[in-house]
Amino acid sequence: MKRLIVIFILIVIGISITTAYAQSQHQIPSWVKTNAGWWADGKIDDNSFVQGIQFLIKDKVISITNIPSEISDKPQQSVPVWIKYNAGWWAKDLITEDEFVKSIEYLIAIGIINIKEDSQSVDNEIQKRLDEIEKINSENTYTPKERDWQTSGPFQIDRSKYAIGEKIFLILDQLSPDDKGQIAVLRPLNATHYTVYITIPFDGMVKPDFNFYLEPQISKTRGICSVNDITGKWVMVFRGTDYPNLYFEITKDVVPGTNIDPTC
Image 1 (cartoon, helix red, strand yellow):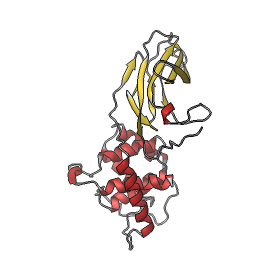
Image 2 (spheres, rainbow, N blue to C red):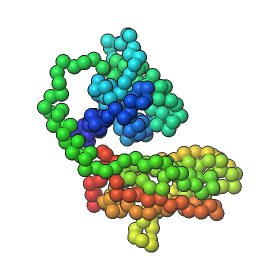
Image 3 (cartoon, rainbow, N blue to C red):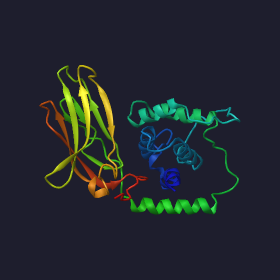
Image 4 (cartoon, helix red, strand yellow):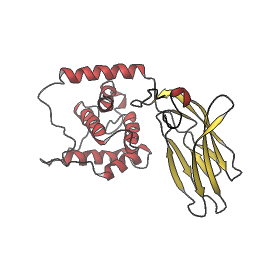
C-alpha cells in the first residue's frame, strides 16, 4: 500500500497542475524538483519516481520537446546511477532544468520511460487508488520548507524546522586541525530536559570536511514510541569545542509516506 501511495502521489498532484507553469521551457512544476531530491536521497524508490514522471509526460503536465527518434524495444532493467545523481544535483540547483530533461530523454530512449499512448483509460482499481491518494493529500498540509542554513563555526544544518520524515543535512566544512570531539544530537524529553539521540565523532586532523544525514524516526529500541517523542526543539552540542549550540525544531507536519504508527 505504501508503495502504491508513493507511485501515485506524483499522479494526483500532477492532475491539479495548471498553466501557471507554462513559462518554463519544459513545463516542469517546481514540486517535481522537490520529488527529484527525495528520489536522490532514497525517500522514493526508482520505480515509483520513473512511473510518476512517465504519467506526467503522458498527461502533458511535463512537456518533452525532443523525443528520441529511436527507442529501444528491449527496455533496460534498471535506472543508471548517474541519472539519480543528476536528479539530486538539479534539486540543489547544481545543474539546469534542461540538463535534467536530457536525463528524462535518455530514459525514454532506453525504454525505461514508456510514453506510448495506452489504448485503455485508467481502470477502476487505479481510479480507486487515485481517489484514496487525493483524499490523503487533501488531509496532509505538508509542504517542503525553504532552506535556512543554521551555522556554528564550521558546522551547518540546512533548516531551523523539519517535518517528521525529513532528513537533517549536516555539513562540516573546513574543520581546523584542532577541531576534535563529538556532535551530540539531543532530543527533548520535556521543556527542560534532553536525552542523547546520537553522537557523531569528528577530527579535523583526519577529515576536515564531510556531510552527514540524520533522519529521526519512531523506534522502539531508541525509546521513541510515537510522534510526541520526536516533535519539539532539538539541540546539537559540539563537545570538545567552544562553538555555540545549534537548535532546530521537528514539527508535527509529516512527509507523505512516512510511517508514524506507535511502536511501544
